[in-house]
Length: 244
Image 1 (cartoon, helix red, strand yellow):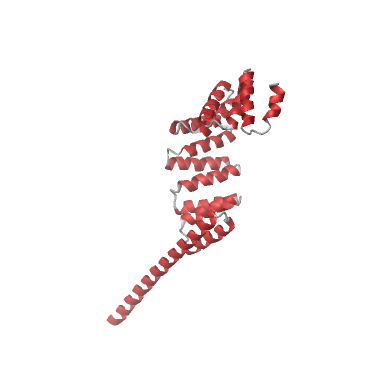
Image 2: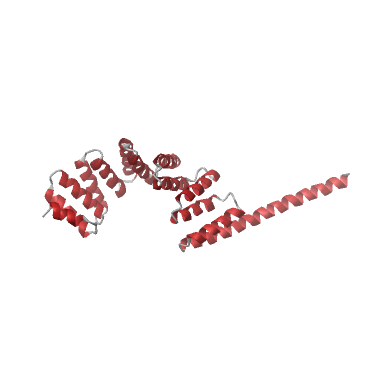
């Protein structure tokens, strides 16, 4: 009886060691496929990358990075629904993957699922209150839902975190000019955008249009002309119509 117990013990021990050994092997194989997948991704072979990420997942279904990176590859192929599915799997494995929440929010934005996008951006902000890009992206989504007050708050917060965020100034200028009828406020924000990025044609174009709206024809036409010089398409037809 004692010998039988010893045999059972060694059988159990061997099985446990064998199981751990297999897990270790599978984990290493998953890492190898993940490395190969990343190489394919950086070579812009997204179909190949997806195949390799899928193999990495096969050997380690709890590899959140593999799901996240496969979602990135699917995004490059414009498979936005597939990307959302993989970002969601990555989040299920690690609920603190802020990058997966953010990128899933971007995919929801692409599909015009703005409430879902806002929810994901809000989760990123919960995990990282200094995420300026999340405030900016959430503000843009709120504009789509005509939540102009909420959008303004998010743009302001973006600028508070990073006073040099030109996209935030530009977006806030658009909001002021197009939705809140604050043309002078819009001009101020477009001017700040230009200060931060002097070669941005959109800044000159939008400021020029705003200036024209309040009768500042000379400065407006100069800005439109500058936008054209920097490559803004179609602006010269507007100049011919209003400036000549």
